[in-house]
View 1: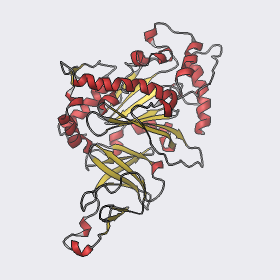
View 2: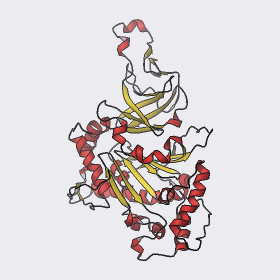
View 3: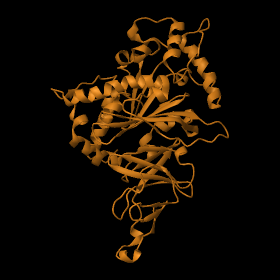
View 4: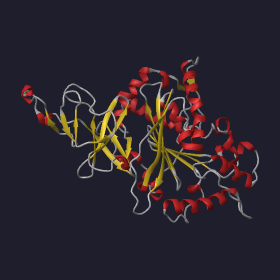
Length: 424
């Protein structure tokens, strides 16, 4: 199913990133029609638990129901338009803090103060407007406008690929976010290619096969970059010494190796095999799973999937990275969120996670360690990307045909929504 289908080589117009009109077109024509990742199941542990989800000018309450199902309602009082809630939490009803109009957690109107003054209203027509909700692998999604593919169809083939990696047993260990002064697409695209590694992240080249990354495209909505670790970057010119590759891996890849770890390469093995053996044992204990059949790739490489438009879960048997990008609130700013997911062992219960917001002048490194350090190298690029596009003379962005094919794929799908196509 994977492909590199023929795509145009025409440049992208910077208006896609800097134009308020283009941004408004996304808000009206694209965002209401796509499935959006809004929460993990562990954020809604019991009936009445709700998550406030806001994006692209809309506000929703994603609520666990008495029967265990999840529903999503527009977070707007139908009396005078106040937001019903300004943060996530738990409630038995949603009472507007302005005048006290109330709705139960199923979205049904339950109380009108001074009801005698509203005899003209038909209460059965005042339920909170609802969005579609779907769930896969412990991830909860909503779609504002009904119609189009089911969630399963939209995500395909991602659920098939992820079946053995058990995201249904995952839980949020860490969750941090930061507002970036750059367009949401520019932020997402920084994680769609490994082409930038040699310039932006040179310290990881001694154990990262950046230009050996495989890029695959699936339908309209899913693509993946698989970047191999445990090998020397081809940009460095030779095969490299196995022990040096391992030493650099241990030093700079905190996602899969704990700080202070030392690993010796056994006689007759290369760095990649050595790291595979080490991680199969380590992550098998962490996950409470037998990983003897897991490949070297599944326990060390970066399987960076992207689901249109703004959801990026990593694959493999490793602590899982999940990215989400939301316009915050306009075309010049993005809320970038990073989660690290672990796996629950038999009998364990997931804690309810809370997002840690980092100030613009603070670093992801404070919450995410070595992974955060690498992220900050990307963050230093993004504001300058936005400023450069705003000042561009020729208004064009040129893309590589293969290494940046996921970006082209992303814009192909976006264009289908902006054109008003019905087949997404």
